[in-house]
Length: 429
Ligand code: ASP
Image 1 (cartoon, protein in one colour):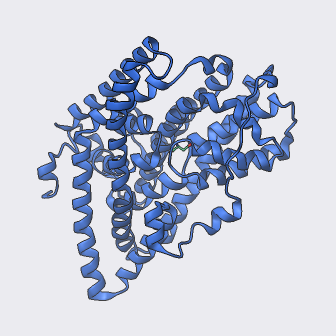
Image 2 (spheres, helix red, strand yellow):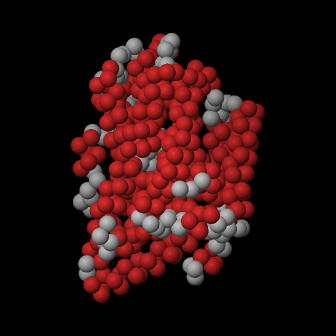
Image 3 (cartoon, helix red, strand yellow):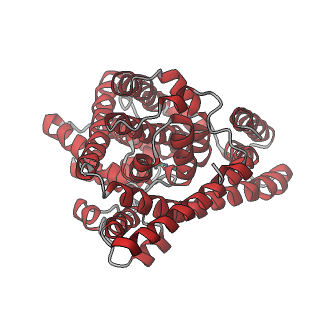
């Protein structure tokens, strides 16, 4: 299937899955019915899980191989340290900006006023990592263990060091680096193959999600729910558009259009980690960011950059403070900005983790962690939406860094046909 047909098919599949799932939920609201048992929990759930497993399968090999290639290319470049600083700086700044916006809007909307705490269900918080742990965890002691556990930050650190060492190892290093580049092509081919079945996978995921998703919780939390959505939209359409216009010099709408498959993957999987192979492929072949930058910036972003998650955490903190009648104060807000930015670094790109690291933010400002029980009912839908913002944020920063290094290929960006490579031809290109 060619590229634009594939994009259309993925978006259509997403919509069709949403409709069918909602119809099933409407026809059979309680679990245990025939459709639920045989079709949702049987056919569609299995299809969706196989699809997610195949995506995750690609993440560790792809990040490892592509980053070793990227780092060994960059190691010859004087600017390597500067590129790293720029990337991390941009990720942290956009995240901090997202939280400031979340705190500002939440204080205008006041989503937590009038919440009846008596109706709160109990919540046992999973232990969230401390800030010290977050920092120490970046450095691997066992690379195989890091890969087996899918600890992406550690895999990233190991791959970068290995790539740099390869460049410094003369002829042998050069040979290894060339074979890594070949591996990279093969793994990218796997990504392209998987994308061909993406419409079926996305359809299965959406049917399962919406057949099981109850909307009743949204009624009680409508102000919180809409407030998070509003800030997500603002950050998406204002912050990213401004960055794309001013720092990349491209039309944001064209950018979003090229990113549609990535957004559909992010929305239906709720995981920036699982979406990573598609983000990488799209950013390189459809947006025009050179491999030397994307292979470093995108995996790092999928691991440490979570603007959408930070937005949810900002609004949730204000909401919980209001519901529990606690005054946070200016120092408290500054603390929220700092800890939510760090929490976003420590949040793994998998579904629902943002809610766990929210405990870290709440504890830092002295709010009860049990407050998470208040918002858990609507978190699934918000998780899907914030993951879209998380992955688009990674692609935006990658484009800014690429442009600043003079390796943003505008001909690819402007070419509506770009990236329409049939799987069999991709490897020869
Ligand atoms: N699901 C989000 C992601 O993978 C993380 C979160 O907010 O829970 O990007």
